[in-house]
Structures are given as structure tokens and as C-alpha cells.
Image 1 (cartoon, one colour):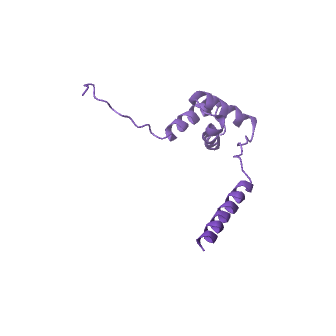
Image 2 (tube, one colour; image 1 turned 60 degrees about the horizontal axis):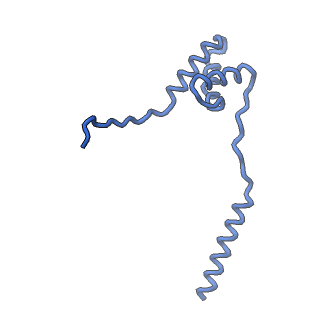
Image 3 (cartoon, one colour; image 1 turned 180 degrees about the vertical axis):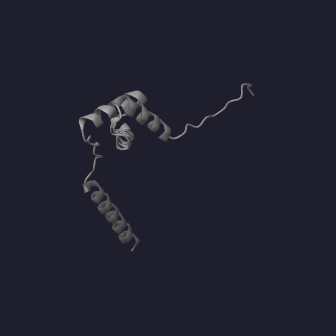
Length: 100
């Protein structure tokens, strides 16, 4: 009787693994830029803060939404500032100067 349970368990695990293998894989979609200005600003912010343009896109969109008529330089500075403010804080570890 226990051999039947073991075979049934192995078959069930095999079916689950086969189902996971056949499941369609979804790759994350790259964000699309709505216009040329947004793409240009996102790339400028990304160069400034050292990240990918896709990561800077949210900050750029927010700044364009708040002040669409501001010059590009102002939007880049504000988006870079707010992008840096939203980063998680780094944890600092202090070490004693004296050994031992």
C-alpha cells in the first residue's frame, strides 16, 4: 500500500513540475515613453543620478505633471532631486578606531 502512495506522490509532483514548465513566461515590459521630451528628460536624469532611464521615468513624469511649462534643465534638476530623496536610506556602520 505504501508503494502506491509513493508512486502517486511522485506522479503528482511530476504533473505539478510539468505544469510549471509549460506555464507561459512573462518578461517585464519596458516602459514606453509618451513623447520625445519625456524620453530625453528621463535619459538626462538617468545620467545625472546614475540609474537606468526606466527607473528615472517615474520622477520625470511626476515633474512634468506638476510643472509642464518649466524649462528642461529645471525639470531635470527637480526630478533628480526627488529621485534621490525617494531612495532608501543607506545603513551606516561605525567602527571603533581602537582594535581589540
